[in-house]
Structure formats: C-alpha cells, structure tokens
View (tube, one colour):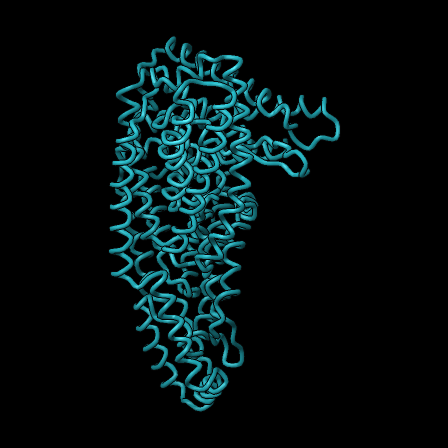
Amino acid sequence: MSNMIASLYNIRLLDELAEKTTIIHNLHPLVKVLTTCLYLIITVSFNKYELSGLLPLFFYPVIVMALADIPVVPLLKRMIVVSPFIIGIGLFNPLFDHDPVVILPWMQISGGWISFFSILTKGVLTILAALLLIATTGMTRIAAALGMMRIPKVFILQLILTYRYISVLIEEVGRTVRAYSLRSRGEKGIRFSDWGSLTGQLLIRTLERAQRVYYSMCCRGFTGEYNAGSEKRIRTGDILYFAGWSLYFVVVRYFNIPATIGSLITGVGR
Amino acid sequence: MHMADALISPVVGGAMWAATAGVAAYSAKKVQNDLDEQKIPLMGVMGAFVFAAQMINFTIPGTGSSGHLGGGMLLAILLGPYAGFLVMASILVIQALFFADGGLLALGCNIFNLGFYTCFIAYPLIYKWITRKGYSTGRIFTGAMLSAIIGLQLGAFSVVLETLFSGKSELPFGTFVMLMQPIHLAIGVVEGLVTAAIVGFVWKARPEIIEKAASGKALGRVSIKKVLAGLAVVAVITGGILSWFASAYPDGLEWSMAKTSGKEELEASGGIHQILAAVQEKIAFLPDYSFKVQEQETSAGDAEPEEAWPAVDAGTSVSGLVGGAMTLLLAGIVGFCINRVKKRNKAGAV
C-alpha cells in the first residue's frame, strides 16, 4: 500500500512541478526532449574509466534545476530509490578489475573503482536529466513533442490515456488491497488462493471501466484523434537553447576541462 | 530488470532503440489497421491497470516473501501481441520518465527485453500453441506459466548480452548469466503463476473476454511465419549494427582484452612500485613548465577516448582530481547564484 501512495505522490509532484512557468518550462518541448537525448548520449559515450571529464556535465542539471525552480530533495530521493541496481551491477567492477591506477603520487586504487565511480556518476547524471525533462515539461507536452517527431498517433494516444488513468487505477487497486489487508490480519500480501480472484476482479472492473471511458469519450466527440491544442512554434530562443547546450556538450566531450583547469592550478601552485 | 543508462553504451542503446522502434512502428500500423477506435481507451486503461497491479504484493506460499506481476504476458493474452507490445512500451516510458526506473537511452533495451520476447516469441509460439485446441484451466495454466518463464528468461539473457556489448560492467559473461537466469527463473515462476491465476479467473467469470482476445477478432492476430521472419530481420540488423560498431571501435570485449594485455605489460615492466617511484621522482624534480607541458600532452591525448587507464601517469590524475573538484564547486556556485538572483527578483517584484 505504501508504495502505491508513494508513486501517486511522485506522479502528482512531478505534474505540479511541470505546471510552473519559468524560462525552462516555457521552452518548446521538442527542444527539451532533443537536448535531453543529446545529453544522455554524450554522458553515456564517455570511456568507462573517465571520471573527471564527466564532471562538467553536472552544469546542465544544476543550471536547469536552478532556472526551473525544481527542488533538489525529491529528485535525490528518487535517485536513491533507483540507484541500488546501478550500484549492484557496478560493484562487480572493483571485484573483477584489479589494474592499479595512480590517483595521487602516493595513492593508487584499482581501475575497477574508477569505472565503478564512473558508472555511478553517469547514473546520477542520466537519472537527473530524465527527471528534469518530465518535471519541466509534463506528460502532455512531451506527447506533443513525440507527435512532432512522427511517432505513430495510436501509440501517443494510448500513452496519454495510460498516464491519465494511472492515478485512477492506483487509487482503485489501493482501495481494494487496503480492504483485503484489513480483513486478513498478519498477512503481508495477497494469499496464493486469492491471487486470481482479487486481481481478476480488478481486471474485469477495469475492462468495464474502459467501455464506459470509451462511451463518454464518444459523447464528447471522440473520433480517434487526441486534440491537445496546437503547440507553440519553435522560436529563436529555443534554437539558441539547444545550440548552446549542444556546443557545450560537444566541447565537454572532446576536451577534459577539469584536467585543464587542474593542470593550470597545480602548475601555477607549485 | 530495467536497465539503466549508466550501464549501456550509446551503440547498444541506439541499436536497441532502432530495433524497438521498428517493432513498435509495425505494431502501431497493425493496430491502426485492425482496431476500431474503441480499443484505444481499452489499451490505455489496461496499461494503467498493469501499472497499478505491478504494485500488488503477492505472498509466495511457503517462503514468507512476496512477488510482483510484470504484466507483459497478461497484456499479450488480453490485447494480442501488437497492442500488448505498445501498451508495455508506454508503461515503460512512464516508468522511465516519472520514476527514473530504467533510463531513457536504455528504454529501447527495456521495451525490447520486456515487450518483444513476451508478445512476439512466448505468446505466439508457446501460449497460442498450447491453447490451440481450445481453452481449459489446465491449458491456460500451462500456457501462461511456460510462456511467462520463457519470455522472462529470454529477456534476462538479452540484458546480459546488452550489458556485455556495452562494456561498462566488468562482470564476466558466465558469472552474469549464472546470476541473471536463475533469479529470473524464480521471478518467471511467480509471473507465470499470477498470470495463470488472473487469466484462469477471468476465463471462468467472463470467458468471452479471453476467447475474443484469442480469436484475434478485434485485436489483431499474429502470424507465426511473420514473427519468425521479423525476428530474423531484427537479429540480422541488430547483429550487423553491433558487430560493425564492435569492429569500428574496440569497445566491450575487445577493449577488455586490450586492457588485460596492457596489465601484463605493466607487471612485466617491474611492478607498480617502480612506476610509482618514478612518478614521484618526476613530480619532485621536474620544473613547473615541463610538468605543464606533460599535462598538455596528456590532455591532448585524452581526445583519444580509448586511451587505456592503467598506463596513466599521476600528473593527469592529480590535475583531474583538482580540476574535477573545482568544476563541481563551480557548478554548485552557479546553481546557488541563479537561485539567489531569482529569489531577489521575486522579492523585488513583491
């Protein structure tokens, strides 16, 4: 039950954040989708032992988060929930890769740890980018962007419908499970004997609901099209936003900025 | 089993996106041709149902632990393969966007792993074959059970291959397979039992739902010949793209081989202590300018992404550490300043 409440809360929070009207929110959704994609590709394309070169990529989430007024804590919480998988797979790297790497003149660690931290950093960056996309754009506008990318209408339509009905169905499933657990003391979940009947009844109810949804859509003139209103045109600002970040990402990919700064500092400092 | 962006390479992510987009486009076309618009709300609401049902805890008898439903097989059985695949894809899109559960770049992998094998392999080849002579509780149970297990096994194996080709994880193939397959056998058994229980119940309560779905009347039937042909095409394309890239860039397997040989060289040349001593000596005695020159050389070499780490010198590492810390600090300061300026502007506006 608690996980259902948590995910409902999460969806609503991101929906609310997407309603803001900051400079980032007002950008064209297609531009944000493309920028995010490029960012992800660049982030993931780094060599597995690359760590310092990745760090300038933190500027993107930090700046977007600040400009879009997105609170850090909920995103970090989400990250902590998903990171065990990344950590779980990544932790095998130090186990299998013992090549020594010199970190400081008096200190060395195995290459596995470097690649582990590289995976971890990439994990943080990619998760932040995905969450920031939805938190600054919202599902409907992302769907509009997908439409502009010529994704089939059937897919977009049922994606939006799935998204719309998730909160309704989570509430319904939640109520049913709560009622069940109140009547079955000491049980942690659904008993084996009730697996089919509880979920099956929910399923039948869902199918009937789909029928009603369809009728009510028909009453409102549904003809197989989803009209979300026309999306704004792409403006110069949008193009500049995309071009600016693209340039930055490419520079970061080909020049190790931290190493350059570091060599300047260590060189001058000595 | 949702793969994260951090564990895949752009080549694998891109190849799987291409494969998934191909299957999705074909499915969308089939659905558009075969379905009346009535089924679009059905697909949407079913997607939401599976999303919610994934959160139900099913107590596994005799173990005290609980399992969950994945839903790929259930969707294929109730909606047919094409609509089932699209609905599974949209569930995964929402999970990736709102819950960061599986990355956006890895979305192609995840949709393929969880949707393709269930809807286009396990469903037509196993479930449909077992229930070809009509429905009975036994056949539904066997069909759902076997197809769920095999669908998940294929998906899990696919995860192993994708991770391997990406070359980010050091997990050896054998270890990873031994890790993934048995876990997903257990998960598959639970998935199969839950799917069988639900389909069995619905078949008893409302047989027409299951029969109508199976006959492919409104939801599209899948022809096995086409599935096999499509699978062959996907395999050839994916294999072709992957092998082409694998040879163009010494990534993944080849790369780790190169690395192993690099290590041997390193050990042969007298161990790390000597290198370390030499490096210390260098740092202690070289004047500033040559240290800088050395830095510039190595950072120029960094443009070559496959530069092996083990052969690195401490100069790069030190400057990487210092510069990295500076970069992060700077990023933090920029974020902080933007926030301050915005707050001040807001206060000014009030």
